[in-house]
Length: 472
Ligand code: IFM
Image 1 (cartoon, rainbow, N blue to C red):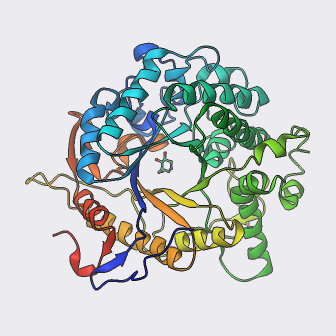
Image 2: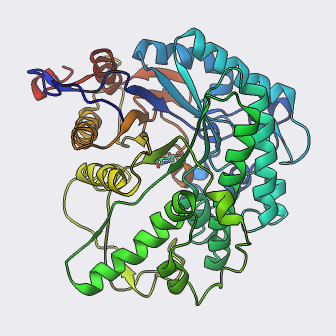
Image 3: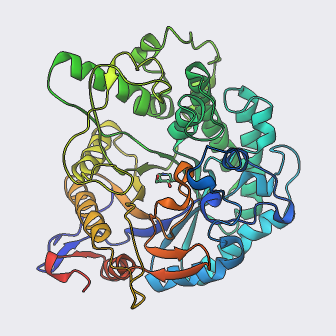
């Protein structure tokens, strides 16, 4: 367990445990650009973003924040922030273009240079193997609904770990498999844009399988002390009322949003109610003997991504939906209160509830908040400053919630702010800005926002300043 500082509250603010990991996070397709360079081939997101009508404004990740060419400048920004860790993702089509076969050396070299630059700057590299950029060839062969994709993932994990394992000690197999399965294959809001709820359930299982096979591949390729993890966007599900119908709606969404991953990964079983609820769509016969044992290979920590709670009530919702077999049973009421530019409610209690729930459900599993942050409509003012006070307020309340969860016994080892840079926000293109560093997408000029200065101060002190200490 992380030891909580004996004096957690100082006159100035809330002190975090010694050794707490302070990071920022990004993902390859959202920042790298260089979409056709050095042997990289299209991923499902290249295809999707180049399909008219899929992404707001017709935006693509072709250039993004040009991080592939500006990596050193971005590492220097992080060094100035003082962060201890940087969570990035490896682009599968950059290191293994067709998703099978040998690696491309130039692709691997980019990540070796990145890891070296980070280590030189005193920043721990944290690599995620899959943040949604499936090589298009694997989608053409059937994508995540097809079992072989999981086997290809394990081979990719192995060759990437062999190339980077001497520099990178912290690895995550998948980022947010819920989004990959359900936004990608059920609602079609994300690549590859399919709308088959049954295919999405198969995809979810094969993503779990990819994770389990990936853990085995990483353990075989990496030196023993390496840390292997998985990142989930767990849903802080709340029933609108205490009625039996609303509570049952919450149970359904908890099964489809959380337990569909947590139960196989940590308990080696599928939730019975999930199997029952989804019976009209599938008999789950694609889960083979031994799969759940593979999926439940022990991991060293769990990454939790949190942005907003999920409030549900009995009712029905529109199709296509990301919630297979739930459309006729669940609605998602809109509650009053502050919202971010994503139209997501601001509610830090959801993060505290998730972390303390995991404390109870998964005792002994260290937790990392691997993403948290907010999009707001930022502008560079005439003096060259971005006064993103709403983002600072969001970060302050969410970090306070993390602190409270630690004080309540949750073993939270670190916090990764999403995101270092404004970037390609998937179906929203460049219209939503999550960065603590503003990016002018025409010139690629980076301007640290007030939130960057605020976060640097938090990191330097290891403490969340009191209200009065806000950046002026
Ligand atoms: O930008 C995304 C990220 O890629 C995955 N988690 C949520 C973020 C904000 O939508």
